[in-house]
Image (cartoon, rainbow, N blue to C red; front, side, top):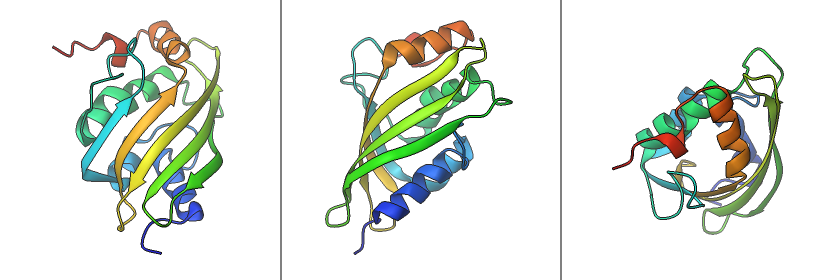
Length: 154
């Protein structure tokens, strides 16, 4: 099987989140292909709907703000709930549950589904994310972090 197995996808997710629940820019950089294209679904989020962005913009506009809104001194986790598909064509549906504490001291509980396509080299090349945007935006606002919904994209 040239594409990542479910266990390998779990390892890739672990790398993206530094083995815990906090988005790790260096980890994302290791496992995202340079030709990556990603989108977050939803028109209320600046990265939502029709805006597809590349690897560095993904890290700068999504990974860094999410990390900046979390209290990194508190326990957190990013658990893979289930993976559907994969092996034959590189496409997976990955259900994630992220927990932790925001910098404002509020519970961070976010369920996310990612439609992800991997290369035969086990690099993430395409992603479409479905998440609770209002929940994430509230944490970004509480922490006074400029995140996806407040970036000037024009």
